[in-house]
Length: 226
Image (cartoon, rainbow, N blue to C red; front, top):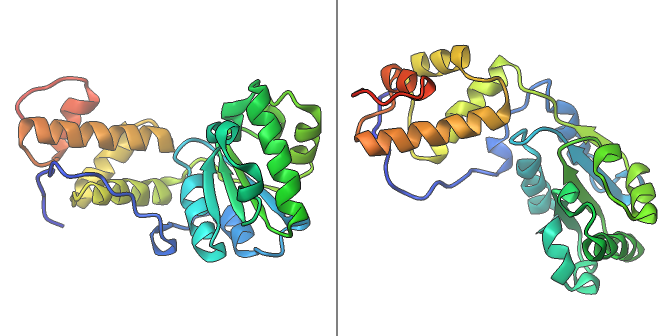
């Protein structure tokens, strides 16, 4: 795989089914998505750390179900009856914890969507019990929802994620670079996302391809000529 200099182009994240890398850490969540529309009570919760693939799976499902996707913090101003006329995914539900209007909107969306015979997909980082929602009726309904967790990545998945994140930025890394990054980086999805962003920025700033030498400078928080 050839070295490539970063291009100052918009990063486009590939969110199709073919771009989702299946591993033991996410296989159960993907399997649950694939059981739609036979979800228990017409709803499903996806949990897992930042960058684990929750949003990717939401888009995979939405493409199949022709569903609407909305961020939880946008519910406060949304037309809830209109949203309930379709399958709906609500992302990052814990973000509205303590927001009475948004929690009430989600409660009504939950009830109306299911009453209309549509399905509901919700996401959040921790388990539902730790979402911090204060509306008791909403919390009880969500705690009774089937949940699938995406776990922390193994080496194979983290490698695939690094390659994908770089490819989303029009970058083609050498295998040696991926091996080096795996041995030095924090082992989480969030760390991979942050590291690729910093590598791309350093590449653009230096007008140099992303090499092991440049990666070492970024990881050491140094900026020598690389």
